[in-house]
Image: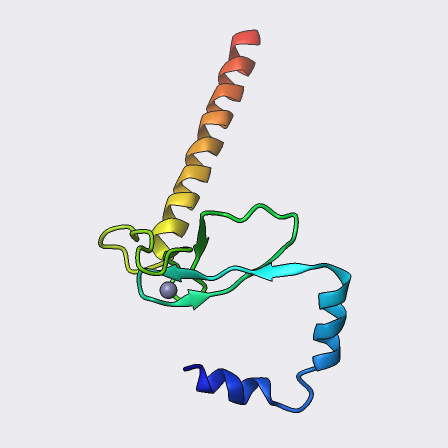
Length: 111
Ligand SMILES: [Zn+2]
């Protein structure tokens, strides 16, 4: 597996020295996460970091978990990313409107 990565990793100028430097400055551990599409992502965490239960798959946007055989279920009927981005936008807008409305109400009450 990962023949493509092997080719990429052997490219001249990839900087093995830079990697060694980074590895020495802070001990890091790589944790594997798998999404429902079986994509593996291995973010690295500082030794003292709290490892999250899920990680957003960088390839498809699904939540990924540490159990390869039992990845977190993605939102139903949602291809990827758009749903989450949409919800986040909506939520932010709604919060902003609520705060604005409250501020206006207070203002009007005081005048
Ligand atoms: Zn994925």
